[in-house]
Image (cartoon, rainbow, N blue to C red):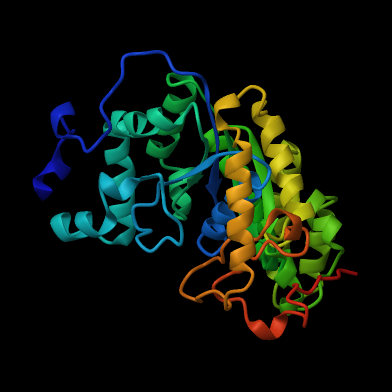
Length: 355
């Protein structure tokens, strides 16, 4: 009955796993946040493959109640508790209001999430695919409150991976906005944080950068951005505002980006290492998540079979995982709108160059 939206679910009616009254080990995972179109879902699937090829058992948790066509099999999905469509139909809310309502509903029924994760926490590393609505992780308190319960009461070590589309670097105003959104997310969620510039393999499609990619990633002297805006007749009137915003960003001194292409093993590995270090993760500590030899062989065998198949269905965000030995050539993860014309003859992606 949809009337359940108006109240906290009693334990007897929650669609959850039966609670076990025993002590579990510490849980580990990462929260993938960022604005719509930043590549969160593609990142989740790509990082899952990356970890599994290195012997780590991973479970993806869908915390987006509007993501009903996810190209992965979620171990836990918020849609089993509540969905945006259900809220819109019953309460007459718009998409944004319904999303906020879903997060508030999750906060009030957080035990459902705890019970759903508990059977997996000792044997899986979690990747949480989060909604793309900015106010949920920048302003509104429900999502943050759930995270703090997970860390402070349920013994989870979590790191936030915040994605920003690298094409924002092509426009100085958009780049400053991305810095502000990232900074606000760091201050609001209060978790270990890894900020990522995603889709750098597609950056050259948007034209040349005013500065090198390293400048944007390291968030160097932002006075250059201010001067660049001042020299543009269309943007000059925003110079003073931009200067004030950049001063705030530099005063905090917290934001640094890691450039990443989900198809590039080296950049994915760099992000994975930073995340693991931020939460003190290792398979030695989380022994239950270590894949056995037979499981690794089976995954490698499945990858060999997948290499002979046709190109992936564009309705799916990703292709199946390749064999371990072929991983360095291509992770076989593509954006659903990635045009074939922008790929080299050997199947690899073009590498952007920033002067």
